[in-house]
Length: 416
Image (tube, rainbow, N blue to C red; front, side, top):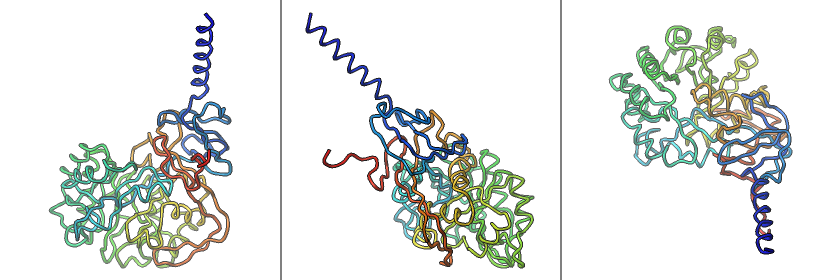
């Protein structure tokens, strides 16, 4: 009888212990910024089975198998970089389509707090299945994509991306419907004066019910964007590289400023009508002489992105978090830059299950330290802009698992 009594006590203790440890991980004491849910205060976040289980003022640490002390840090949804190039491969002379200029995502995302990235047109309908097999299915980062209106993708600006005969709206839309990872259509680098490539992209977008991202090419003189904004693109479509271009209207891209350095009215009018303006920094598409004047006159991005590839990462762009920090130093608040790199891009790419910390959502989370001091930021011409604020990624969690831990805040001590 005594033996059964002891066994009952042990079973009760085990049951109580299991009930007490209800969550896999609890992030305690961090300042949570979750724009979708209007959260901007110190809160605890609990994770179970790869999902957000609870967000509350205080969650009992005894309920967590693992505790992360986030005091003094900012806790946000995992960032979404909606313009990068990840169709990496080893085929020579293929530019951003299965070649060396594109990057393997996992090496460049988690260290910046990015958990979702979107390839911007590396693959077209002819080679998207290869991109999925070679990159998407092999990456821990969530990789989505804008499919290129050019069937062979970004194989090379000349001649491949100039070939109107390889721009097929029907086939592009059919492949877009086939693969759930495709969130939009991309048209970029076109150097002709015709509107047809942009119209083809919009037609494909309409057939597949997805947005279009436009990267203006090398047309000289530049195509008049007032016509594109009013007659070609739709609300919800995206113009990337918003702080690139020229002020004269002559050259490869029309920028947001005219020759007198005044903000072109049709840019603000287009944004008011629902066109999305994206930073898309890149290796040659973010200039402080344009960005400073444009922001001072009220042109701010809807979304922040990198245009990450081997050229931009080793130049002025560097990382997603560096671009986010640049926009803070130009005048956006911390809450605004987090919105523009989490919930807003999730809405733009029609993935509203991402970009927030709602209970039941996937546990993609980033923890940042905000440093104050004297910092320098470079644009695409490597011109310096000084700033006093810089974000650094402390921890990145993807589907409930720690994938980046800068200072070991989620790790046990070696001698414990």
